[in-house]
Length: 309
Ligand code: AGV
Ligand code: CA
Figure 1 (cartoon, helix red, strand yellow):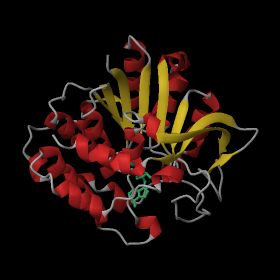
Figure 2: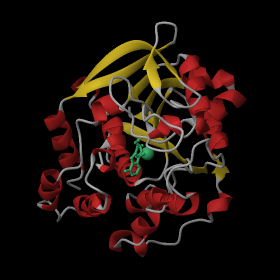
Figure 3: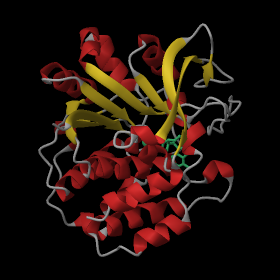
């Protein structure tokens, strides 16, 4: 029996690649996708999410629209990328997407899917966690319906990737966007596994990987994902602008948990400047799990195999 999965993403290129990867997994039954307007503008991102469902013949999977805008906004240049995705040759001519304002709000879709599920649901989040936290604030009893939460977020024993005013650089963006909801999520002490920068730093998007992916371009998904990834290389080649397989690594955890090194720890989230959104180890904090390492070669091979469709 495939395990039921709710996914919340925030429309960046690796979020969309992650949605596609989920749709290739035989052991996962996607029961809903909600989109957070964080690393995207919501209308084109909902269209991208719908187009990927169409491409895989899964347009019956319900989408939910995030209406809450976090505390610390993402840079606009990052948010605008789904417009380009929607114009790619494999996506532009798909039948028209629904009106983005016709969707249920994201927390309401999460509540509906959790309350009607017949077994415990796994939740994958590849953007900020606000939609889930708002759903659980409204319906706290649904915490019992969650099997595990897998979240790309945080930075524990490494520097963060936020570089902005009134900030010391210790936070990771998904946590920084809404430090208050992030701290609430930690405080629930649900089975929460973080895939933080500590482990995603091991998996950059490399030309070597893209070159191997291109050698199997006769497979439709290798063709499409190769184009997605090429769009991420338009950035300045310095640490803070290297594109990593952030969300894709978190998504792969669903299929290959045994390839990760996981640590259980007590931790907390700062909600104030100069380190708002920093996730830090703290004996008096909350119990969480986070990945510290992964079998890198296995991970890249896994992606190449999944996209040979
Ligand atoms: O901090 C990583 C998160 C991931 O969920 N996002 C990108 C991934 O979707 C924010 C981010 C950090 N650096 C970025 C980001 C960059 N250079 N471009 C776009 N987004
Ligand atoms: Ca993301």
